[in-house]
Length: 211
Image (cartoon, rainbow, N blue to C red; front, side):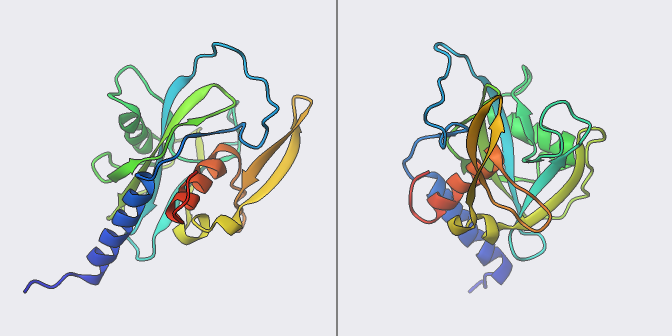
């Protein structure tokens, strides 16, 4: 009888757990979840986007790869984000956009991620409908931050962001209004906003709840 390598067995178990979580019923999320009083313009049109939620198991314990945006950027400077961006005309869908951006932003070869599935769409305050594409990465790759856009590529233990109790609700004034949002800090990294909200959605699904 052929023996299963422990690493492959663990990867298969994680894949099954994530797939089961993504298949659970539940609606999408938005930057407005903690601010129900926000009045959104009628008939607004959202632009499609895709972000990659890349979990690497190349070095053993699963770790989530994230980026820190350049402080020189006009929008969201210095914030923690997933690799990703808007769906371009040449992209087949949001998953294709996420894979393309993963290559452009951090040097992740597009054939390396094993896509497990997608979380429900997330609406951002900037007018995007974001599809989070969850993928496993089995092999190491040479990280190559996109010059001028990505200041740092780093990773955090997947276990940390899958623990719902690690999420904190904070607030700040934005355009004269106090807005509340999720954070899930790790070491020197302040993960907040849409990134934290999407990760919290994954965390509660992994715990057997919905979004």
